[in-house]
Length: 494
Image (cartoon, rainbow, N blue to C red; front, top):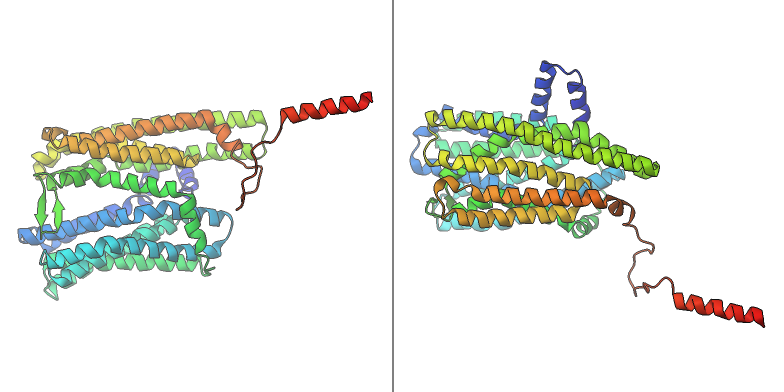
């Protein structure tokens, strides 16, 4: 997100309370505002339309449908987004702008194919086994595909640094969805849960169309060079693995608890564990500000040190390179420690707020007992993700893979164990997995700092790569050289 650094520097350089609040608000708008807009719109529709007075079964059907739409749209997009982001960054750097639309179309095709492979069998099961009405199943599937397209197009607009447009499109889409929900209920007299689902689906589709139109306005040419994209998937397979396992790790603990006695099954298709899922949502919101803090600070501080080191490597003296390297890693440590300190204060305040006030508005019992351990786990999780991004900075893709796999597997095993523990320890799987991933990423960053010179200066090749017989690895024969010297001495004597 190299686009918001300049703007944030201009905001914070005045160093006043007003500008600090404005900077925090700006960074919020360009990072996580879309998510809050969707959640806020769902709550507002439910309040205005009287969703709480609807029967239990329709309410749970709507809640589970929206939950599945969000979870599996993120999971289906995770294998592609990191590689496509890398490809986009490279072709923009090389100024091959005509390749961007080829990348967009091919990536969208791959994303839709995987999404349909996941979604269509589930919808068939929902219709034939769950006996859900066909129009409801189709609307839910359309909402799922629309959100897949929304998340996919957001990737390209983010690389183009058009963050405010993303927030504007989400605002417009959710306003339209809210108005349509009123129209469906009060004019066409449709059922409230279905009206909300249909309105959200149309809103997501509108956002996807607006994002696509914006991308087309930027890149009008298409080179039709699709093969290069597959070469990137083969070359940077580590990005696929890292992003998939990290995203899977975010939800795998929920999947584990969906198999316990806590689970609830709706229409013989949707499975959830409401107390645990709600506690997970609260824990994530408790620590979501870490994303804002990290993006703001890395844009304002670390990126400049990284740029200075890169420029020193290209044309600086050895002493300049060593000084720039020392300053860069010193800044890296400072950013991680500052993120931990600031986020810890925020987390404690929000945690106390939730513990005191949430029981008064209906959130109590099992949800509140699960929440503390999950909040601690998500606190470490967001710090771990910051370290993964630093590994990306240094092109240590192998270290990122190790971190994400360790995080996902430890979370899964820890959650399986946690199902047999008292409910207050249900979140220990996330806590253990996040801590294991954090330790793995930290050790890998230490390794990178000690071996960065080898990583930067010793990755070239003396021979051009090609297809054929591999040349001999021997470049010098000591004994042959000695024989040559002996022969020359004998020739001089004669």
